[in-house]
Image (cartoon, rainbow over all chains, first blue to last red; front, side, top):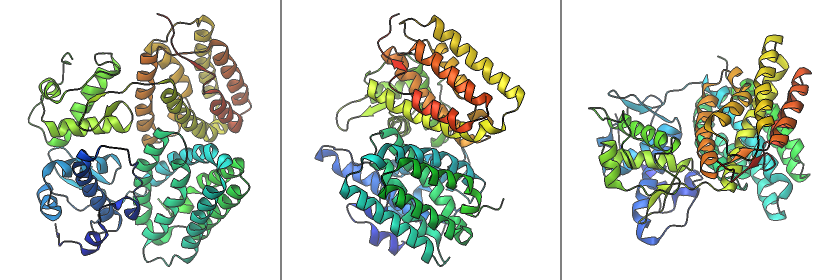
Length: 247
Length: 225
């Protein structure tokens, strides 16, 4: 496995990587004594996560514990824990007694993932839209506007960025809901969807996606959760075209 | 903690080891071998599950993520303690998923399917009629879940089914810990409204019924027995 230390990933890894690397892990309150131990395994997770999403680690590429340990300078345990979380997110697959590898592209999974995510988004928007305060609503609308812009201006080189903007916009709702289980599941299954969609690249229907974000923006402006629900139904019904799944 | 039969380790890779550990823990939590709030000590777990610390930690973290285990760093790890509010949270998610897929599935239901749906919810109505104030058994919850899951089973979405399995586990654990049960009158009303809408092939109304009625209204805790 060609493992030259990826400078890009290293640059992005500063002590509080959560925001920057865009993986919205809930930051629990923990006593400082445990700070470093917690951070190491989360840092390992963040770096692997990012490496998979930005293509540093390619779909299907083999993953070997020992090489990761050398690359990241950590022991086996944080590697194992990070890999396991990524397996759960379907970003890594692990065949017992055989290999561990980055998940390959599996466009067939996109409609399955999308159906589940749409159910989550419907719940999340229903729980939050009507009770958003001014500041949060503004923040939400900015994220939605950025997502719409990213779709419009996406030049097809790498879907990663556009998908990242979309992720932030959609995650806003679940993050602002009271439902902890919803938050956890949106992160987990959202990661799998994001990964597969970023591999679809240019085949995503950007105009359609842009219109979804515009509709959500209107729904937030009007504090209308029913309208948000309709926008999400539209995502569901145009799902295949939206994500460029031809299979 | 008592050992769970069938958890014997063998020469497997680390991936299987943590999966096996997780499964054993899950079974033990579900069948009451481990109870809500029970402390989980590393050494005891290592001895019981026959694997080392790392796969155990992995298994515990996964269970913690879905709220079956609580890990307080440098303090204890324990089986989660479901609360009424955590139960309602799970129910809300459960309802949202089933409602979403029902909306898609209902319009296409054939007559045979519809008859089957009536049978499933007929059983729910029977349960509701006998329903006093006693805590539901796992069989009772399974009966209601079977009816509600009618639509999910017709989506052909394996990811959805895996996820629902996990949620069902959490629900079952919460129900048994809290001695929860469903309100008889609410259940009956739900079944009636749902079947009426399904007869009209109105997916939207079926979904709305599920979303609205699987809430605090339908669940009661602290049942007898």
